[in-house]
Length: 560
Image (cartoon, helix red, strand yellow):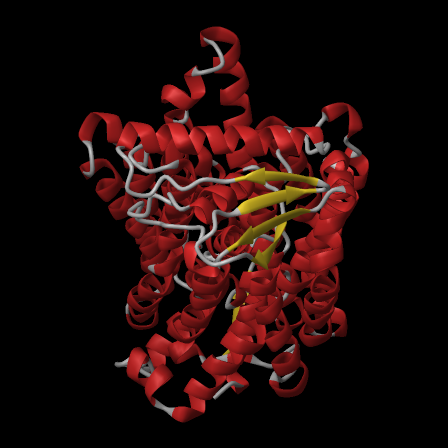
């Protein structure tokens, strides 16, 4: 029996009950993260299925943007379910979230492709992503609050860290199911089966996981903190207004967002998602190798969440989170350079020996991304840059003579580009193909590989680099649930903590792959996209260091 202080009212909770609470909360959250991450891990396939009307780069960026769209609606779900959780109860709110997430995910597996239904296909996909994001917006705040309100003051970091591991288990399950499905279908139906229809299987499997999650959550009772508050009649009747309309609480919401969640979104989604984009699009590593590496680091990350959550119970939340932020801040640029060295050394060698340069009239050049697929990139500069961007080759820009066609210099060789603007469609395509062929041939002569060579990969070295990112991400993420719960009073806790969490992870983190890839495509340097997460992490380090209070051991009833 453990006596847990709940707003001044001791409530006896059996250890077995606490284990059930943690298990049910973490299992349901794992299922929701699985649903959400299956989409992110299949971005390349989804771009071909639902955006086949766009060119390769625009289609890929559109799929990344759609991945981010699910995150964009998470704060909306946080507000909606936070209000329900603070007025009606924690249990009911996050029972609904798991049903919504499961239904939307299964529906994605049944949607028609662009080739079958045209523009209606990506519209339906967008609607399902919005539902996923909306439901996930209510999940985290409910699970974190529910677990924290059941445990003792000196074990909140350890107990809530199991909710954090749900992200790792969900991502691992998503990667594992995708890998097994890809390999099995490749063996039985051929290499094209997974891209053609097999990608639907991981989504459809959610129906079985949904049943398990609902069953476990139906067994739960309401949190003792909420029951005590309800008995006293001290519930907030307008948690949205109270949390965000009173400066006393709004100030804490802003600090939590800028000083903690800015870094969380940037660090975690760089470590677990942008690295996949970077390895696939720029380092040209085979998807199976990426999946294997990601599964290994995700598996290794699971116990680290619990360790750092437990450690924060001993030394404080703030120093542990600051360690994670600072480590990633130091590791961003050297870490990604080391990934290139370990996974595609030929590319790194070619970049050093024969750097690429685009010499062009600036007026002839456009931004090298187009999420809606309206630009054709037919100028000589655009053709040259889009070819290099799609090849994953960094380049520098030099100003060329006005009204002259762009040139690509690779080492000592120079390839003349040509404009396809204003030409008939078939002629323009032939011009672009000719220029692309010449540039690719020049890159090959200069030692640029079309694909990463498995024989030259240093996989243990790459794993080591990725583990640096993982340590940083888990040190930051492990104590966050306890910290956010301890920052806010019971009457508005679900609402107040959910919004900064989902703005940070949704609007900062969810758009890391899209924004970073877009920056690279427009600037030309494959490492330039890292400035996006770096900037958010730097701001968070400064704010956390000077303005975020230490919350470890703070009685929940003492937060007013």
